[in-house]
Image (tube, rainbow, N blue to C red; front, side):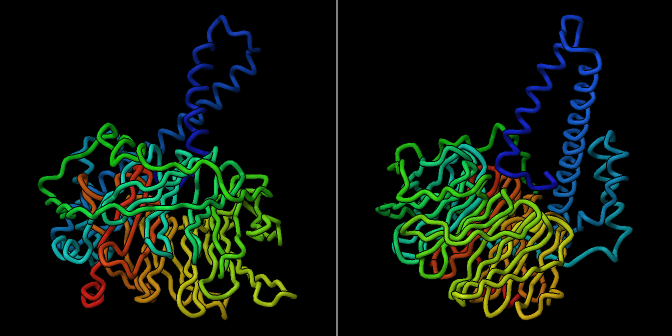
Length: 477
Protein backbone atom coordinates (compact mmCIF):
# COMPACT_ATOMS: atom_id res chain seq x y z
CA UNK A 1 0.00 0.00 0.00
CA UNK A 2 1.67 3.20 -1.11
CA UNK A 3 -0.67 5.63 0.62
CA UNK A 4 -2.22 5.20 4.07
CA UNK A 5 -5.94 4.61 4.10
CA UNK A 6 -8.07 5.57 7.04
CA UNK A 7 -10.12 3.40 9.41
CA UNK A 8 -13.41 3.53 7.60
CA UNK A 9 -11.84 3.27 4.12
CA UNK A 10 -10.99 -0.38 4.64
CA UNK A 11 -14.65 -1.25 5.09
CA UNK A 12 -15.61 1.01 2.18
CA UNK A 13 -13.17 -0.63 -0.19
CA UNK A 14 -14.22 -4.14 0.76
CA UNK A 15 -17.87 -3.17 0.42
CA UNK A 16 -17.27 -1.59 -2.98
CA UNK A 17 -15.77 -4.81 -4.28
CA UNK A 18 -18.76 -6.88 -3.20
CA UNK A 19 -21.18 -4.35 -4.69
CA UNK A 20 -19.33 -4.41 -7.98
CA UNK A 21 -19.52 -8.19 -8.12
CA UNK A 22 -23.28 -8.18 -7.53
CA UNK A 23 -23.98 -5.50 -10.10
CA UNK A 24 -21.72 -6.87 -12.78
CA UNK A 25 -23.45 -10.22 -12.37
CA UNK A 26 -26.79 -8.59 -13.14
CA UNK A 27 -25.59 -6.73 -16.20
CA UNK A 28 -27.15 -9.29 -18.50
CA UNK A 29 -30.59 -9.49 -20.03
CA UNK A 30 -32.42 -9.89 -16.71
CA UNK A 31 -31.29 -6.45 -15.48
CA UNK A 32 -34.15 -4.01 -14.88
CA UNK A 33 -31.83 -1.01 -14.98
CA UNK A 34 -31.99 1.36 -17.96
CA UNK A 35 -29.16 0.77 -20.39
CA UNK A 36 -27.57 4.19 -19.78
CA UNK A 37 -27.56 3.71 -16.01
CA UNK A 38 -26.13 0.21 -16.32
CA UNK A 39 -23.37 1.39 -18.63
CA UNK A 40 -22.49 4.21 -16.25
CA UNK A 41 -22.27 1.80 -13.33
CA UNK A 42 -20.09 -0.59 -15.27
CA UNK A 43 -17.77 2.24 -16.24
CA UNK A 44 -17.47 3.37 -12.60
CA UNK A 45 -16.79 -0.17 -11.42
CA UNK A 46 -14.21 -0.46 -14.16
CA UNK A 47 -12.45 2.60 -12.80
CA UNK A 48 -12.45 1.04 -9.32
CA UNK A 49 -10.98 -2.15 -10.74
CA UNK A 50 -8.22 -0.16 -12.44
CA UNK A 51 -7.42 1.61 -9.16
CA UNK A 52 -7.08 -1.75 -7.41
CA UNK A 53 -4.89 -2.98 -10.24
CA UNK A 54 -2.60 0.04 -9.84
CA UNK A 55 -2.34 -0.60 -6.09
CA UNK A 56 -1.55 -4.25 -6.78
CA UNK A 57 1.22 -3.33 -9.21
CA UNK A 58 2.69 -0.83 -6.75
CA UNK A 59 2.67 -3.49 -4.04
CA UNK A 60 4.55 -5.82 -6.37
CA UNK A 61 7.12 -3.07 -6.91
CA UNK A 62 7.50 -2.64 -3.15
CA UNK A 63 8.05 -6.38 -2.75
CA UNK A 64 10.79 -6.35 -5.38
CA UNK A 65 12.47 -3.27 -3.90
CA UNK A 66 12.35 -4.79 -0.40
CA UNK A 67 13.83 -8.06 -1.67
CA UNK A 68 16.69 -6.21 -3.33
CA UNK A 69 17.26 -4.04 -0.26
CA UNK A 70 17.54 -7.12 1.95
CA UNK A 71 20.22 -8.52 -0.38
CA UNK A 72 22.08 -5.22 -0.54
CA UNK A 73 21.90 -4.76 3.23
CA UNK A 74 24.51 -7.47 3.62
CA UNK A 75 26.83 -5.29 1.54
CA UNK A 76 26.17 -2.25 3.72
CA UNK A 77 24.18 -0.44 1.03
CA UNK A 78 20.60 0.13 0.02
CA UNK A 79 18.72 1.74 -2.84
CA UNK A 80 16.08 4.40 -2.42
CA UNK A 81 12.81 3.17 -3.93
CA UNK A 82 11.76 6.74 -4.62
CA UNK A 83 14.58 7.05 -7.13
CA UNK A 84 13.21 4.27 -9.33
CA UNK A 85 10.97 5.20 -12.22
CA UNK A 86 7.47 3.93 -11.57
CA UNK A 87 6.63 4.34 -15.21
CA UNK A 88 9.42 2.01 -16.26
CA UNK A 89 8.42 -0.57 -13.69
CA UNK A 90 4.75 -0.49 -14.60
CA UNK A 91 5.38 -0.88 -18.31
CA UNK A 92 7.34 -4.02 -17.49
CA UNK A 93 4.93 -5.36 -14.88
CA UNK A 94 4.31 -8.45 -16.97
CA UNK A 95 7.99 -9.45 -16.84
CA UNK A 96 9.02 -12.34 -14.66
CA UNK A 97 10.37 -11.78 -11.15
CA UNK A 98 13.91 -12.54 -12.26
CA UNK A 99 13.73 -10.00 -15.08
CA UNK A 100 12.43 -7.27 -12.76
CA UNK A 101 15.06 -8.09 -10.15
CA UNK A 102 17.74 -7.79 -12.85
CA UNK A 103 16.38 -4.38 -13.88
CA UNK A 104 16.52 -3.19 -10.27
CA UNK A 105 20.10 -4.41 -9.94
CA UNK A 106 21.04 -2.67 -13.18
CA UNK A 107 19.45 0.57 -11.98
CA UNK A 108 21.32 0.20 -8.71
CA UNK A 109 24.70 -0.28 -10.40
CA UNK A 110 24.16 2.53 -12.94
CA UNK A 111 22.99 5.10 -10.38
CA UNK A 112 25.88 5.25 -7.95
CA UNK A 113 25.10 8.86 -7.14
CA UNK A 114 21.70 7.80 -5.84
CA UNK A 115 23.01 5.20 -3.42
CA UNK A 116 22.91 6.19 0.23
CA UNK A 117 24.82 4.86 3.21
CA UNK A 118 23.25 2.23 5.42
CA UNK A 119 24.20 -0.04 8.30
CA UNK A 120 25.42 -3.56 7.89
CA UNK A 121 22.87 -6.15 8.95
CA UNK A 122 24.95 -7.36 11.87
CA UNK A 123 25.38 -3.83 13.21
CA UNK A 124 21.65 -3.08 12.97
CA UNK A 125 20.78 -6.27 14.83
CA UNK A 126 23.17 -5.45 17.66
CA UNK A 127 21.82 -1.91 18.10
CA UNK A 128 18.11 -2.49 17.36
CA UNK A 129 16.72 -5.77 18.67
CA UNK A 130 13.17 -7.08 18.44
CA UNK A 131 12.25 -8.28 21.94
CA UNK A 132 8.51 -8.84 22.14
CA UNK A 133 5.47 -9.20 19.87
CA UNK A 134 2.02 -8.29 21.16
CA UNK A 135 -0.52 -10.35 19.23
CA UNK A 136 -4.26 -10.47 19.93
CA UNK A 137 -6.08 -7.89 17.81
CA UNK A 138 -8.30 -9.08 14.97
CA UNK A 139 -7.66 -6.11 12.68
CA UNK A 140 -5.00 -3.49 12.03
CA UNK A 141 -3.58 -1.46 14.92
CA UNK A 142 -3.67 2.31 14.38
CA UNK A 143 -2.04 3.61 17.54
CA UNK A 144 0.27 2.53 20.35
CA UNK A 145 0.99 4.34 23.62
CA UNK A 146 2.75 3.74 26.94
CA UNK A 147 1.26 4.53 30.36
CA UNK A 148 2.82 7.38 32.32
CA UNK A 149 1.95 5.92 35.74
CA UNK A 150 2.85 2.72 37.58
CA UNK A 151 2.39 -0.03 36.61
CA UNK A 152 3.72 0.86 33.15
CA UNK A 153 1.62 -0.90 30.50
CA UNK A 154 1.34 -0.75 26.74
CA UNK A 155 -1.89 0.36 25.06
CA UNK A 156 -3.01 -0.38 21.49
CA UNK A 157 -5.98 0.96 19.50
CA UNK A 158 -7.34 -1.16 16.67
CA UNK A 159 -9.75 -1.17 13.75
CA UNK A 160 -11.37 -4.23 15.39
CA UNK A 161 -13.29 -1.76 17.65
CA UNK A 162 -11.22 -2.56 20.75
CA UNK A 163 -8.34 -1.12 22.76
CA UNK A 164 -6.03 -3.53 24.59
CA UNK A 165 -3.61 -3.04 27.48
CA UNK A 166 -0.55 -5.30 27.59
CA UNK A 167 2.18 -6.36 29.97
CA UNK A 168 5.33 -5.04 28.33
CA UNK A 169 7.49 -7.80 29.80
CA UNK A 170 5.33 -10.87 29.12
CA UNK A 171 3.26 -9.78 26.11
CA UNK A 172 0.08 -10.86 27.93
CA UNK A 173 -3.15 -8.93 27.40
CA UNK A 174 -4.23 -7.36 30.72
CA UNK A 175 -7.40 -5.38 29.88
CA UNK A 176 -9.73 -5.23 26.89
CA UNK A 177 -11.88 -2.13 26.27
CA UNK A 178 -14.99 -2.78 24.14
CA UNK A 179 -17.02 0.41 24.70
CA UNK A 180 -16.69 1.74 21.14
CA UNK A 181 -18.84 0.66 18.19
CA UNK A 182 -16.36 1.85 15.57
CA UNK A 183 -12.66 1.59 14.81
CA UNK A 184 -10.53 2.74 17.76
CA UNK A 185 -8.13 5.20 16.16
CA UNK A 186 -5.96 6.38 19.05
CA UNK A 187 -5.19 5.75 22.72
CA UNK A 188 -3.50 8.03 25.27
CA UNK A 189 -2.93 7.54 29.01
CA UNK A 190 -3.76 10.09 31.73
CA UNK A 191 -0.61 11.76 33.12
CA UNK A 192 -1.29 10.81 36.77
CA UNK A 193 -4.17 8.28 36.97
CA UNK A 194 -5.00 4.82 35.62
CA UNK A 195 -7.32 6.29 33.02
CA UNK A 196 -7.19 6.02 29.23
CA UNK A 197 -8.55 8.26 26.46
CA UNK A 198 -9.58 6.63 23.17
CA UNK A 199 -10.88 8.15 19.92
CA UNK A 200 -13.14 6.25 17.56
CA UNK A 201 -14.84 6.11 14.20
CA UNK A 202 -18.16 6.12 16.08
CA UNK A 203 -17.73 9.94 16.34
CA UNK A 204 -16.92 9.86 20.07
CA UNK A 205 -13.94 9.86 22.40
CA UNK A 206 -14.14 7.79 25.60
CA UNK A 207 -12.46 8.24 28.95
CA UNK A 208 -12.30 4.95 30.85
CA UNK A 209 -10.64 3.61 33.98
CA UNK A 210 -8.57 0.43 34.13
CA UNK A 211 -7.11 -1.70 36.92
CA UNK A 212 -4.26 -4.01 36.01
CA UNK A 213 -2.28 -6.65 37.82
CA UNK A 214 1.01 -7.44 36.14
CA UNK A 215 1.80 -11.14 35.61
CA UNK A 216 5.11 -12.70 36.60
CA UNK A 217 7.68 -11.98 33.88
CA UNK A 218 8.87 -14.95 31.84
CA UNK A 219 12.33 -15.25 30.24
CA UNK A 220 12.42 -13.30 26.99
CA UNK A 221 12.73 -15.57 23.97
CA UNK A 222 15.63 -15.05 21.60
CA UNK A 223 14.12 -12.91 18.85
CA UNK A 224 17.35 -12.23 16.95
CA UNK A 225 16.71 -11.74 13.29
CA UNK A 226 17.35 -14.67 10.98
CA UNK A 227 19.83 -14.35 8.17
CA UNK A 228 18.70 -13.12 4.78
CA UNK A 229 19.53 -16.48 3.18
CA UNK A 230 16.95 -18.24 5.37
CA UNK A 231 14.10 -15.82 4.71
CA UNK A 232 10.88 -17.22 3.32
CA UNK A 233 8.03 -15.10 2.02
CA UNK A 234 5.05 -15.17 4.37
CA UNK A 235 1.57 -15.11 2.88
CA UNK A 236 -1.58 -13.62 4.35
CA UNK A 237 -2.64 -16.97 5.77
CA UNK A 238 0.51 -17.04 7.92
CA UNK A 239 -0.32 -13.77 9.66
CA UNK A 240 -1.54 -13.65 13.25
CA UNK A 241 -5.20 -14.63 13.38
CA UNK A 242 -6.00 -12.58 16.45
CA UNK A 243 -6.10 -15.52 18.86
CA UNK A 244 -2.43 -15.37 19.85
CA UNK A 245 -1.44 -14.53 23.43
CA UNK A 246 -5.08 -14.73 24.42
CA UNK A 247 -6.88 -11.41 24.41
CA UNK A 248 -10.10 -13.38 24.96
CA UNK A 249 -9.41 -14.34 28.59
CA UNK A 250 -8.39 -10.92 29.93
CA UNK A 251 -10.70 -8.65 31.99
CA UNK A 252 -13.07 -6.55 29.88
CA UNK A 253 -14.13 -2.92 30.40
CA UNK A 254 -17.44 -2.32 28.64
CA UNK A 255 -18.44 1.25 29.47
CA UNK A 256 -16.59 4.57 29.77
CA UNK A 257 -16.50 6.97 32.69
CA UNK A 258 -17.18 9.79 30.23
CA UNK A 259 -18.09 10.02 26.56
CA UNK A 260 -17.18 13.15 24.53
CA UNK A 261 -19.79 13.52 21.79
CA UNK A 262 -19.64 16.88 20.01
CA UNK A 263 -18.14 15.78 16.67
CA UNK A 264 -20.07 15.13 13.46
CA UNK A 265 -17.49 12.79 11.96
CA UNK A 266 -14.86 10.19 12.74
CA UNK A 267 -12.70 11.14 15.75
CA UNK A 268 -9.25 10.25 14.51
CA UNK A 269 -7.15 11.23 17.56
CA UNK A 270 -7.35 12.56 21.11
CA UNK A 271 -4.88 13.67 23.79
CA UNK A 272 -4.72 15.04 27.34
CA UNK A 273 -3.73 18.63 28.03
CA UNK A 274 -1.04 19.13 30.67
CA UNK A 275 -2.51 18.28 34.08
CA UNK A 276 -5.15 15.95 32.66
CA UNK A 277 -8.14 18.18 33.45
CA UNK A 278 -8.88 18.87 29.79
CA UNK A 279 -8.72 16.77 26.63
CA UNK A 280 -8.53 17.65 22.95
CA UNK A 281 -9.98 15.64 20.06
CA UNK A 282 -9.39 15.81 16.28
CA UNK A 283 -12.04 14.79 13.78
CA UNK A 284 -12.81 14.26 10.13
CA UNK A 285 -15.44 17.01 10.52
CA UNK A 286 -12.45 19.41 10.12
CA UNK A 287 -12.53 20.61 13.72
CA UNK A 288 -10.70 19.90 16.96
CA UNK A 289 -12.58 20.18 20.24
CA UNK A 290 -11.32 21.06 23.71
CA UNK A 291 -13.31 19.47 26.56
CA UNK A 292 -13.50 19.77 30.31
CA UNK A 293 -12.91 16.20 31.51
CA UNK A 294 -14.90 16.45 34.74
CA UNK A 295 -18.07 17.86 33.17
CA UNK A 296 -17.66 16.53 29.58
CA UNK A 297 -18.58 20.00 28.37
CA UNK A 298 -17.18 21.49 25.17
CA UNK A 299 -14.87 24.38 26.09
CA UNK A 300 -13.62 25.43 22.63
CA UNK A 301 -14.16 24.30 19.07
CA UNK A 302 -10.97 24.79 17.08
CA UNK A 303 -11.91 25.58 13.49
CA UNK A 304 -9.83 26.64 10.51
CA UNK A 305 -8.57 23.51 8.76
CA UNK A 306 -9.88 23.10 5.22
CA UNK A 307 -9.95 19.30 5.21
CA UNK A 308 -10.19 16.35 7.59
CA UNK A 309 -7.89 16.30 10.61
CA UNK A 310 -5.48 13.39 10.96
CA UNK A 311 -3.86 13.85 14.38
CA UNK A 312 -3.53 16.05 17.45
CA UNK A 313 -0.82 16.33 20.08
CA UNK A 314 -0.38 18.34 23.29
CA UNK A 315 2.74 19.86 24.80
CA UNK A 316 4.00 17.95 27.88
CA UNK A 317 4.42 21.04 30.09
CA UNK A 318 2.49 23.93 28.47
CA UNK A 319 -1.06 24.52 27.28
CA UNK A 320 -0.22 24.12 23.60
CA UNK A 321 -1.88 21.90 20.98
CA UNK A 322 -0.91 20.99 17.42
CA UNK A 323 -3.44 19.61 14.94
CA UNK A 324 -2.57 17.99 11.61
CA UNK A 325 -4.75 17.82 8.53
CA UNK A 326 -5.17 16.53 5.01
CA UNK A 327 -5.06 20.19 3.90
CA UNK A 328 -1.20 19.89 3.98
CA UNK A 329 -0.86 22.11 7.07
CA UNK A 330 -0.63 21.76 10.82
CA UNK A 331 -1.75 24.39 13.30
CA UNK A 332 -0.44 25.47 16.69
CA UNK A 333 -3.11 26.47 19.21
CA UNK A 334 -1.98 28.46 22.26
CA UNK A 335 -4.13 28.33 25.42
CA UNK A 336 -1.52 29.65 27.84
CA UNK A 337 -3.28 33.02 28.17
CA UNK A 338 -6.92 32.40 29.23
CA UNK A 339 -8.06 35.59 27.52
CA UNK A 340 -6.29 34.99 24.19
CA UNK A 341 -6.39 31.79 22.13
CA UNK A 342 -3.96 32.33 19.29
CA UNK A 343 -3.38 30.05 16.32
CA UNK A 344 -0.43 29.75 13.94
CA UNK A 345 -0.46 27.88 10.63
CA UNK A 346 2.58 25.91 9.42
CA UNK A 347 2.75 25.39 5.66
CA UNK A 348 5.62 23.31 4.35
CA UNK A 349 4.27 19.98 3.15
CA UNK A 350 2.75 19.15 -0.22
CA UNK A 351 0.47 16.31 0.94
CA UNK A 352 -1.47 15.19 4.00
CA UNK A 353 0.27 15.94 7.30
CA UNK A 354 -0.18 12.64 9.13
CA UNK A 355 1.16 13.83 12.50
CA UNK A 356 2.92 16.67 14.26
CA UNK A 357 4.43 16.22 17.72
CA UNK A 358 6.15 18.40 20.29
CA UNK A 359 9.73 17.73 21.29
CA UNK A 360 12.33 19.47 23.44
CA UNK A 361 12.36 23.25 23.67
CA UNK A 362 10.33 25.10 21.08
CA UNK A 363 10.49 22.44 18.36
CA UNK A 364 7.76 20.54 16.54
CA UNK A 365 8.34 17.58 14.21
CA UNK A 366 5.84 16.91 11.41
CA UNK A 367 5.47 13.89 9.11
CA UNK A 368 3.59 13.68 5.85
CA UNK A 369 2.38 11.55 2.96
CA UNK A 370 4.74 13.64 0.81
CA UNK A 371 7.51 11.35 2.16
CA UNK A 372 9.18 14.05 4.23
CA UNK A 373 9.61 14.81 7.91
CA UNK A 374 10.30 18.40 8.94
CA UNK A 375 11.66 19.87 12.16
CA UNK A 376 10.28 23.32 13.03
CA UNK A 377 11.13 26.08 15.44
CA UNK A 378 7.92 27.52 16.88
CA UNK A 379 9.46 30.97 16.74
CA UNK A 380 9.99 30.72 12.98
CA UNK A 381 7.00 29.40 11.05
CA UNK A 382 8.25 30.26 7.58
CA UNK A 383 10.61 27.37 6.96
CA UNK A 384 11.74 24.19 8.76
CA UNK A 385 15.15 23.99 10.36
CA UNK A 386 15.66 20.44 9.03
CA UNK A 387 14.03 18.26 6.38
CA UNK A 388 14.24 14.46 6.19
CA UNK A 389 13.42 12.91 2.81
CA UNK A 390 12.36 9.27 2.67
CA UNK A 391 11.18 6.74 0.11
CA UNK A 392 7.71 6.15 1.57
CA UNK A 393 4.83 8.00 3.19
CA UNK A 394 5.33 8.69 6.91
CA UNK A 395 2.67 7.89 9.50
CA UNK A 396 2.44 8.75 13.22
CA UNK A 397 5.93 9.64 14.38
CA UNK A 398 7.36 9.90 17.89
CA UNK A 399 10.43 11.59 19.36
CA UNK A 400 12.77 10.30 22.07
CA UNK A 401 12.94 13.60 23.91
CA UNK A 402 16.00 12.85 26.04
CA UNK A 403 18.18 11.76 23.10
CA UNK A 404 16.41 13.74 20.35
CA UNK A 405 15.80 10.72 18.11
CA UNK A 406 12.83 10.56 15.73
CA UNK A 407 11.21 7.18 14.92
CA UNK A 408 9.51 7.15 11.50
CA UNK A 409 6.87 4.49 10.67
CA UNK A 410 6.41 3.99 6.92
CA UNK A 411 3.82 2.66 4.52
CA UNK A 412 6.46 0.33 3.06
CA UNK A 413 6.74 -1.61 6.38
CA UNK A 414 10.03 0.00 7.41
CA UNK A 415 10.83 1.92 10.60
CA UNK A 416 13.76 4.35 10.45
CA UNK A 417 15.52 6.39 13.13
CA UNK A 418 16.88 9.92 12.53
CA UNK A 419 18.30 12.63 14.72
CA UNK A 420 16.82 16.13 14.90
CA UNK A 421 19.27 17.47 12.33
CA UNK A 422 18.08 14.96 9.74
CA UNK A 423 20.95 12.44 9.96
CA UNK A 424 19.86 8.85 9.49
CA UNK A 425 20.84 6.66 12.44
CA UNK A 426 19.39 3.22 11.71
CA UNK A 427 16.67 1.13 10.11
CA UNK A 428 14.96 -1.39 12.38
CA UNK A 429 15.64 -4.98 11.26
CA UNK A 430 12.87 -6.40 9.10
CA UNK A 431 12.63 -9.68 7.24
CA UNK A 432 9.84 -11.95 6.11
CA UNK A 433 10.02 -13.74 9.45
CA UNK A 434 10.37 -10.76 11.78
CA UNK A 435 9.23 -7.18 11.90
CA UNK A 436 6.08 -5.76 10.39
CA UNK A 437 4.55 -7.36 7.31
CA UNK A 438 2.16 -4.53 6.52
CA UNK A 439 2.07 -0.73 6.80
CA UNK A 440 3.55 0.55 10.08
CA UNK A 441 1.04 3.00 11.54
CA UNK A 442 2.64 4.43 14.68
CA UNK A 443 5.73 4.51 16.91
CA UNK A 444 6.01 5.32 20.62
CA UNK A 445 9.12 5.77 22.77
CA UNK A 446 9.40 4.68 26.40
CA UNK A 447 12.82 6.01 27.29
CA UNK A 448 12.97 4.81 30.90
CA UNK A 449 11.85 1.19 30.41
CA UNK A 450 14.73 -1.24 31.07
CA UNK A 451 13.63 -3.78 28.46
CA UNK A 452 11.70 -2.18 25.58
CA UNK A 453 12.25 1.49 24.86
CA UNK A 454 10.51 1.72 21.45
CA UNK A 455 7.17 0.31 20.32
CA UNK A 456 5.70 0.07 16.84
CA UNK A 457 2.33 -1.10 15.53
CA UNK A 458 0.92 -1.77 12.10
CA UNK A 459 -1.79 -3.15 9.92
CA UNK A 460 -0.42 -6.67 10.31
CA UNK A 461 -2.40 -6.73 13.59
CA UNK A 462 0.58 -6.75 15.89
CA UNK A 463 2.59 -4.38 18.06
CA UNK A 464 6.31 -4.92 18.55
CA UNK A 465 8.61 -3.97 21.43
CA UNK A 466 12.20 -3.07 20.53
CA UNK A 467 15.36 -2.50 22.51
CA UNK A 468 17.34 0.36 20.95
CA UNK A 469 20.90 0.60 22.27
CA UNK A 470 20.95 4.38 22.15
CA UNK A 471 24.58 4.93 23.27
CA UNK A 472 25.79 2.51 20.57
CA UNK A 473 23.43 4.09 18.05
CA UNK A 474 24.82 7.57 18.71
CA UNK A 475 28.37 6.24 18.68
CA UNK A 476 27.78 4.77 15.20
CA UNK A 477 26.60 8.19 14.12
